[in-house]
Image (cartoon, rainbow, N blue to C red; front, side, top):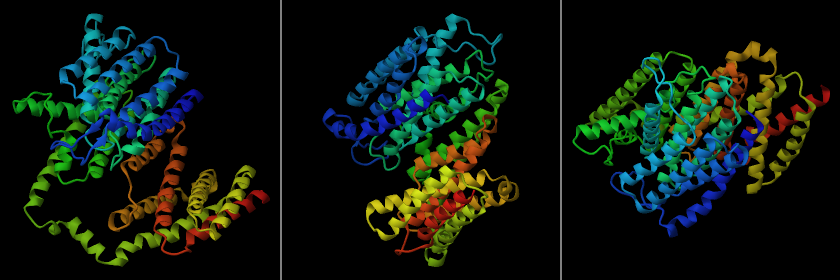
Length: 543
């Protein structure tokens, strides 16, 4: 990724996070508050102004670093128009016909003025749409995707996470096929940065919502990007890939429309028939429902990457099978919940096991006790195992060693912050050095995979069975999914980096659990971090 795209990502992330505290304060006076109703799952009034941070965070870096010409000039104009309609809707709850008018106008601008067109369509003779049909068809596609993402915005972090996964898929598809064109990369990077900054405040329990300003912008932007990436003539990508990239929002919109029409209601009538509502009504918590949707969307994104050069018919079949499995799983969950309501919940095996485990302290304490020994040993043994340490890493380890010694004698809040920095950095260094030690990888790679998988399992058991305050948020789930993706991208040269990132993230969560659940002033981790850093310093001096 070129340097300007990296700058765009960082600036978008910073702008979104910096704007949100201010926007939360002014949402009330501006009347941009979301009140609860029977269809919604939140309680109390929540600011619905986060979309402003997403739009500004995304478009400012694009305006700075991307050439404002052709399709991008049209996109900025269309996005500004949709932004205005979204704000009016969040403030005055516009009639759906006015919302549709705004979406049609924005789509028409980007199609007619920017030349963003769906020219090749699967399963038609010749594959090419004549211009009189391509223009209205593209407008219809963009309006459909905009509404699909807009309708998916029903739980904390849901629409933002789905859009982040879709944008990441488009970025990978673009780079994997050698289409690393500056403007597209900058827009995709800025979109990802602004979404990450927003999700920091939108994961359950959300401090603000994106509103229609954000959800319509995300749907429209991902739709435009999907067309621009998959319709490029210089890329050999299948034209049917947007079905998988935006698989869950499309499935949700289609099932909701069919259910409403079948029941004799308007397809635009709001109700609780969305996939995420059905998951909530099946007894899942918000976080569990969002995690399941993320996982399903993630699997479709992986399919899109793996099948990027496949025939359109194969992609359509894969999408249909995925949708069938998802709908069947949701229906099975609904039936199970109905049966469960008719009997004592403690008769279910999982609930019985959880209740039994919580009554026996040794079961709930075992994961933390094992982690408290294995994670420090991992750091120390990892440092001892590497053959050599570069001088610059030795200097960094030396500075952190001094800091970690000072932390041992200090008990202030800033000292705990420095302890985290030292522990996390030591973990990253050890993972990096072990990954770049062929003699260790060749001998112990399966052992390392088993070890990190075991650490992840222990951490998951601890957060599930204990009464600890430490919890994994849906944003953490997104980060873990992103780390799981990288090892599969060996064609991009990211396989090794992805494994290192995954190992580092597992250690980060384990270290955070150990620090938060510390019961006394001393524990193995507090000694293991300076010991690890000291070993690295010595090895850098004798190298």
